[in-house]
Every structure is written in C-alpha cells, then in structure tokens.
Length: 156
Image (tube, rainbow, N blue to C red; front, top):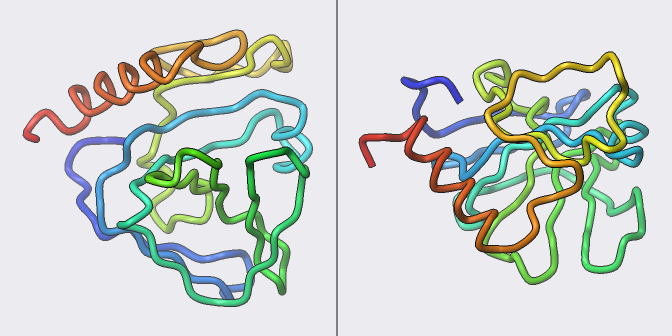
C-alpha cells in the first residue's frame, strides 16, 4: 500500500449490491498464482488485501461458493457473483478481501506473492517477497506482516 492513504477504505462489487468498508490499515497485500485463484479471477493471479476482521463491515446479500476447501469460506455477491472476500478457519481475526473491490484498489500494491510454482511464466508482479507455495508457518506470516507494517506504516 502506498503511504499516505488512510482508512476508512470503501468499495463495492461489480453491480454495487454489496458494499464494503474497512476502518483499519491492512495487515498485508499479496498476489496468489494458484490455479484456483487464476480461475476465480479469470486472470494470471488474484490480489488480496488482508485486514483485521473487526475493522471490516459489509452490507448486501452474499452467498458462499467457489472452492469447497475445508476451513476456508469464500463470499460472493448474490446478484453479480463478484468474489468479495474469504475467511480462513482458525484465522478469525483477519479477512482476505479481494483488492479489486476497493475503490482505491491501485494503491494496495502486492507485497508478497505466493504459489509461484503455479505461476504463468509470463506473469510478473513486483513484490518484496516471493514463495513457491505459501509461508511455511504462522511465525513466517507474522514476520511478513511486521515487514509490511514497517514499510507502509512506519509511524505506528
């Protein structure tokens, strides 16, 4: 995330039926190159901005769908089926918001890329950290969040 932009961050799905608002700075931004995200986003990768759950509010009718991965729920607009966010079981303190639904999406540049083993050979994402799969542990993920905060939120 580029310096200088402060919460709240607002956004909407493609049709506008689902509105989101986040009242905190992000924990982390990332690009995922897994085949599932490629298919979800109809692109070479998906963009995610991780926020504290308690700072996130959403209005509008949503459904769960997508990959039926154990411990992971994906939420979509019921009307236009735009992918809005995901929640991971055991990580209830954070949500993974699809960056593209934010009105100021362009400022949330990815800091990390994951699943590069499945990356399209021509896809280039300028990131600070790259993983062939995912961070190996919760400690490694927390270290990435700390590095992100130090870079983009040094005043905190």
